[in-house]
Length: 591
Image 1 (cartoon, one colour):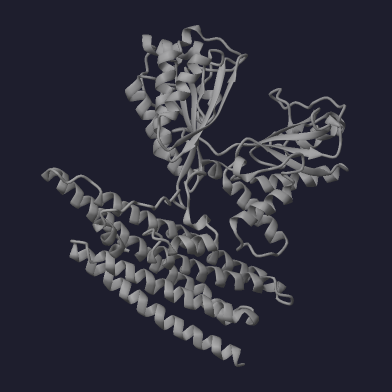
Image 2: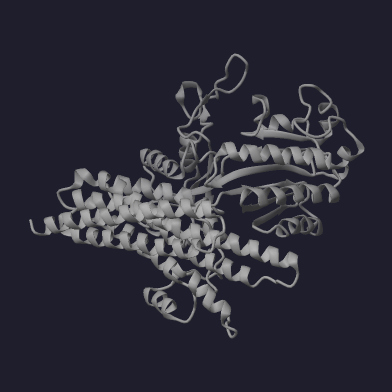
């Protein structure tokens, strides 16, 4: 690709045609933040607070839900951890500036202008990492804004502070006496009720699991039946009654507390109700811990308890947005129940989840509007991998400098993984091989992962080209500008070397799945696996050419020598593996 760059830089009539770019990293970490501010009536104040979020690049505001009676607004936004924490800090700062807690009244418990500010893992991030971000955010709020901060839920520093109600006991009115005590002094910020604290109150910063609100549609109009099912499954359960009868009095323990019979689903809250709009009863549930109780597990349990009472669950509706993993986990669960391969496309897995749980029972369910990761995607950005086969070929054949050999090599690697995955899926569903479905499913899943990463590299290679073009276009009038331009060109060139190097390594990984399918896969598809070997070898060699041409312009010879040595080794291994596999294919063809 570097030779194309030089040619176009020298052309005085050059007009950059490339407008494709990478829209996201396949493993981008995402978290959600749901601050609750103590203002639900003054739209001007609410708008000023939410405007702070929209100033932060990389954060998407998903929802603003004001409540006049509670005098409280629930705000939801999502993005990568650092931008989200920055936006959260700005929300707390602006709320402290505009809201005076001395004048606040509302029906909801509260103790600060920004009452709570939980961080929630969405994708590719652990709870432990989210806790670290919550602690850093809380410390910054306490130090820079002089606001008392209590860390709760998973971010709590001691067990008694996990429960938000414990941290907020006495609410704003009790804060003055509480924060001065050793037992309830804030985790961060002032321990005295200063004039500033009198206006801002305190803020609870936490880390918790994602909450899914879901309603189960029943083939009954009976709210009583719906409530009975809700009590069967919700963690709290139902009161134990005298004689075991519904009409019996609730039983008490020695301390006078009602004895409860726990429900079957941890981390859930549920009630039954009748929905006029649909003319049916529903079990309305909040799943507060989708790690302990995944959505599909809750669905199956509600179906089971409903059936025991002669009621059928006809489907369900998810309220609001959900992380993609909710549907992926559900789709894979139902595929496994059918003894079908899990190594199919993400789109197909999501479709299985929607149909299995009846998410489109009452109205259409569009994943592009209901899944957080899909909502965050920039639909206006073009990607090479979204083109048709004809469109991709035409774009490659045009006078545009990209896509070039690097993107084509990555795509050949993706095709190698795709062919091997196809053979695995065919083998998984082959009549007479039913007892081996899981064996081939695991190979198909491995192939899907390799395919997705190589598809990502198709656009990543073009993005690398764009960075080089941008570097060459930097000003070079002064010595400082020349130095900055030279460094930028070197940085971009190194990136353009690393991308095809990644393609080489990832394409070589496809050989493992290809070999398995040549050896144990459906013999009727052995030639497909053989073509996969050809594609993998071509992808490695093609990417190697790009590594060599781009590395030749790097000044750090130690880095260059190390990359070229490893790249040469990978190519040699790819050629040897291809030859070995083709020999095996020929032997199987000839019997």
